[in-house]
Length: 270
Image (cartoon, rainbow, N blue to C red; front, side, top):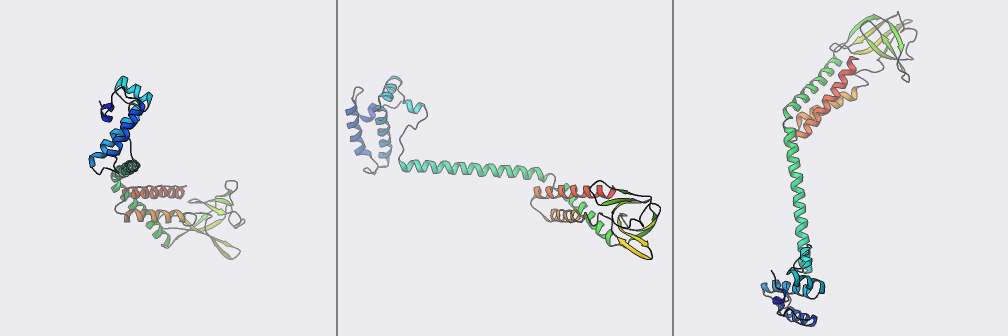
């Protein structure tokens, strides 16, 4: 237990003026600006703390009863700080918080990287498959098309608000612009259809009407309305195969390319 009376060199019955005189005398001796001795600063802090306790009636009364400083019990600093020491303490606390934050971010990044690294091989395989799918569609588009002549089974209006009709033949159902050849492309008439070699997607509709051949693509198909999806699949899967050291990015690109491929296949089948 720290004896503040002994530090100031006074008795326990010393009055406020005697406490003040003892503090001033010791402060003149041990103040860091007047005494260059490294130990003088520690002595000065103890003298200052003793004076703060014994000069305050409430704190002195509590100290006399318990032998403890009431402010220290509530978490106050036991020793008074100079302005320079306070700045240094705040700077160290800020550095500690910054290091703790950096360490937290680093560990979280390591955990995420370890998690996604488990799926790295699978992600690269998905990227390879989806890129192969896009390349196969490109080859399919540029191969010479197959021409079929089929009879129109029906031509019906599509959903309300869409400017297209659904034309049905024995092998295809495809949307067609509602204004195109209302008289020539109708139930019972024969039309020519250009379809791709591999996936049998409708490329063009050929109609002979009054001695003239008309050609039009379907209202939407995998090679026109969904061209953007093919570009996205190709770029994401290709970039996923090219990236080397970012397993999380590769996994995200693989998910994107797989999702877009699934949507593309769905619209090819419906």
